[in-house]
Length: 242
Ligand SMILES: Nc1ncnc2c1ncn2[C@@H]1O[C@H](COP(=O)(O)OP(=O)(O)OP(=O)(O)O)[C@@H](O)[C@H]1O
Image (cartoon, rainbow, N blue to C red):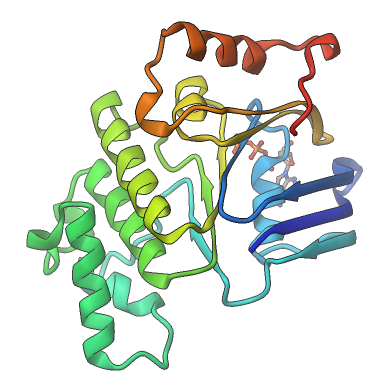
């Protein structure tokens, strides 16, 4: 499902975080919202997820029950096992068997099936984040929101998780909205990139990365081209999405 944001506004007291934002995120693509810390990206995701009300404006395509959200932190319940943490978010109309199958399928995808009966404090930070990813996938929303889910993880693990997500997404063809301020993550994951400043959240550049994910070699000539687009602040270099 596509996401359409129209004339969106949000303030916290006298801080205008989102000022008349218009943005259309097409169906079945990975959209990267790239911008510095504090510019308003999480506020936007929280509005898309329905966790926060906008002051005015419209969001289409993010109806209740359609969203899987991977937060910056794992948000696992410490008193529940890995398996229970995932079961907890599943739609209530699933049979027990269907729920168990989903949990096992997605824990397998993130290589954690052997840890399904462990508690979060028995896992490393990276493992907990993988559980959070499996939990979001198990929920099977049409739209996946990801808010800097790889923060603080080492490069190899991050790369593995990005590969899991790309593989999963390619099979499901969902709309993925990925918030980050990491250049490599953006270049590795995105189909479409939106560069923001803020607050208030303002798009300064947007472009499409026309390269298959398995051809994206950081430091190659083609990736350097996109890296330059990503880090350019000058409006002269805006390349419109076709
Ligand atoms: N509940 C709130 N009450 C008051 N101010 C808030 C609230 N939530 C966010 N803000 C402010 O809004 C601005 C945008 O915050 P937001 O978390 O959306 O930014 P961000 O781009 O996601 O940053 P980061 O990458 O560090 O998570 C910041 O100045 C922040 O202090």
